[in-house]
Length: 192
Image 1 (cartoon, rainbow, N blue to C red):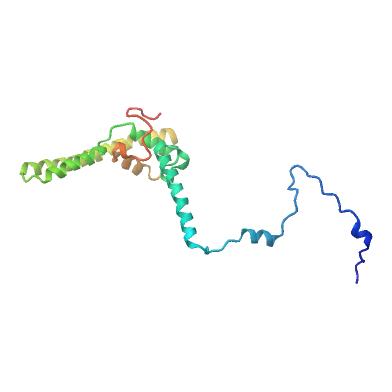
Image 2: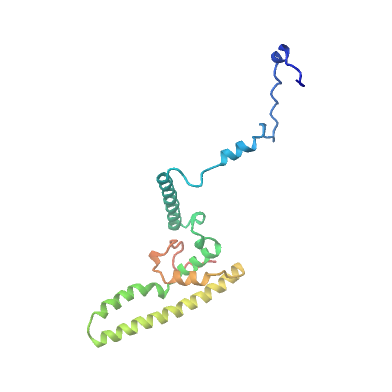
């Protein structure tokens, strides 16, 4: 009614030539908002829960395998958050470079367990002295180790972080073979 009628000539006229591509431009029309929202829309609850659970399990399994491999080789990218960072690496190396009395606690406790089955009074005295003596000496050793490590940490990084002392002491009380991430330095090879 108000527009002009299309004539045969308008319909046959050639279309406008496609715009030439410009470097740095997106070179396509902007999509409609409703089309973009529809493309991004996902249901809150998936229709096939079994498939979703299987997919989640598989993703978690891959992630854990990657993390375990990183723990074995010391790859910083995939370590858990508690083990990441140069400060934690320094603490691990400082603990792994020395002999710790705490790492002998488990074998001694097994010996104490065997001695506790002996019904002699001398065995009970040995058990008592071994248990409490080793615990006392191991705690003192861990405290001295942390003091030296803390001085080196402050010298190198300017400060210690929250939980660093507990991280060092707990690592010192583990047997060297069972420590994760695996020790990357030999004994006596102290970090610089």
